[in-house]
Length: 124
Image (cartoon, rainbow, N blue to C red; front, side, top):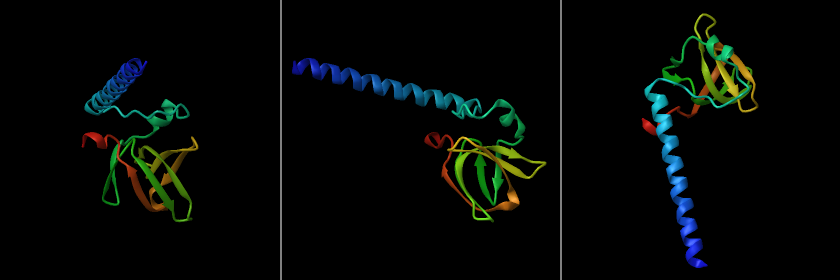
């Protein structure tokens, strides 16, 4: 019985490591082909296509669509979510929050921001 449990545990360990490796390879292929994968069904393709810049600088910091950021506005509102992109002619950025709301913030209304996690940082 103990031998069966050991073999079963080894199979589960192998399967989980194989799954993790395949996920990492998929992310690597996405990064290589400049595909940003935002896993959220509450954002539509129109909202993603509305943004015209996927990589940009904000206050000297390089931001990329898919980065997790925390933003504090000048009116002391706090937003945490995933950056969708920037709209150059409106001088704004789009964020999808963890409450699944798409928020458009003007650059001049941002007091400070913090990058929580960079998109693809595993490969950087």
